[in-house]
Length: 354
Ligand code: COI
Image 1 (cartoon, protein in one colour):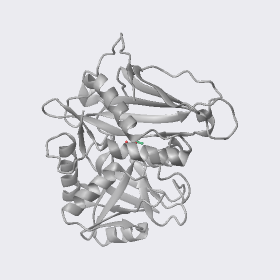
Image 2: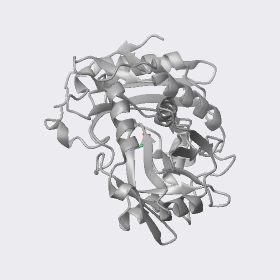
Image 3: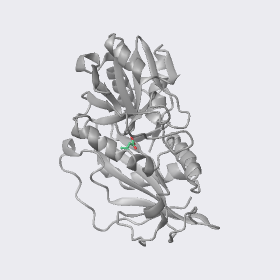
Image 4: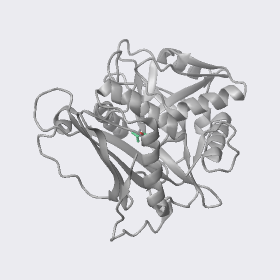
């Protein structure tokens, strides 16, 4: 792929205090853009100064939400070099998501080249402070103009990057999660397994209600019986019960997380049995009552490994690990972040140097 580079002549000031970055609030000087036209394919790949899009009010994406996004990070290591974590997994998930959303796919090698090129141009935006990284947000959206409901013949693919700190205000401190019993996030045949904005739009009201009650996020149950745990608002979730690790299987309603599969690989290497399947919320609460619910943690690119200290379902709460981060959760966090920031050797070939 040929990528044209046009550098900004008016660079922005970089965040002065990296401890105050938050998540996805400030964006770098540049963005990657290319367009798709039916008959021509993807074309005009370029890195240009970060700027707003001008779109007709009748653009398809505003009305019918035909779009998709990804999330990955660039990490600065102690020697100053920059590296990515498993970008091939994000590229493949993007291809799978495009297929579900009727969007022409972007070849994995072009996706990765686009990410690398933008991060290189904006390498000074990769923050230095402990625990910070450059969050990379690739996304694609339909740009046909008109109100007919059909697959668009034109699309824009864009990547923006944001120097970021922890996703949760709590950082690595354990969060409280509300088990959602009213609204659902996904059902068989729908789009739960892909990263389309519609999944998140449908989750916002439940998340807001939970937040008002003092919870960080909601835990979604399956959309048919509201019986089995699936995932949390912005991460997959895992339960350590009586020595074994349980998480929902990726059978179409759960996002196949890159962090999720990396954590499963680490747990298995360390000798844990990992069960990917149906896990009833009633059984989790029972394990909690019996003191067998040893640890609960979320996994995600943005959230990394995020301990859960309390689950509330139908008015009953169970406390986990005495409200503290559990030893396995801490070891997973230390190991994963160690690999990502280059403090621990990458024996899995997960790291891609810039
Ligand atoms: C990520 O972890 O990269 C995500 O996309 C979650 C996001 C919705 C904040």
